[in-house]
Image 1: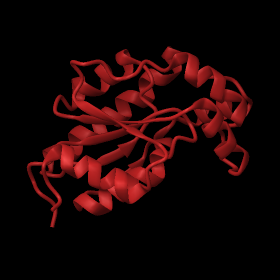
Image 2 (image 1 turned 90 degrees about the vertical axis):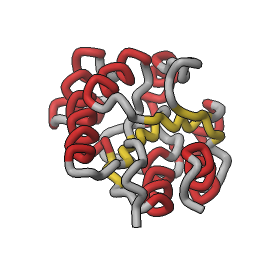
Image 3 (image 1 turned 180 degrees about the vertical axis):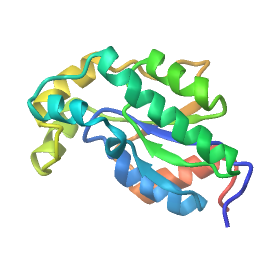
Image 4 (image 1 turned 45 degrees about the vertical axis):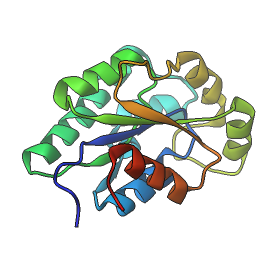
Length: 172
């Protein structure tokens, strides 16, 4: 049974960092529902990325608002949620926080070469590996005043889930 005092969680990072896999593990470990933020992208965003074009801030804003509203909706029903969302810039995270001020971010961080290697072994519906450079250029790591933790992508999904539970002092 999920602890009703858990905050909503956004698993963030560049493509190929393992957000969806880790997010599912975190959700299972904490007893929280998991939502893949990729599924919440408007069709126009998916088409733009599939064509190899990075999204602009203006493209991302409606999607980030959907992410934030989903977290807020869960809280209104007494349910924290785990959502995988790149949340690469501080302003993106700030927008999410306007909807869900108690959100905690889990930044999955790793070396670009390792992530590029991972991407060669996967086929994503609309995120070609060519967009990885733009994602690293856009990435603004969590700042000291942002609620969250940074975890290494080389950890197993279970180890990531346990580290999140430890950081939230739950799940044991």
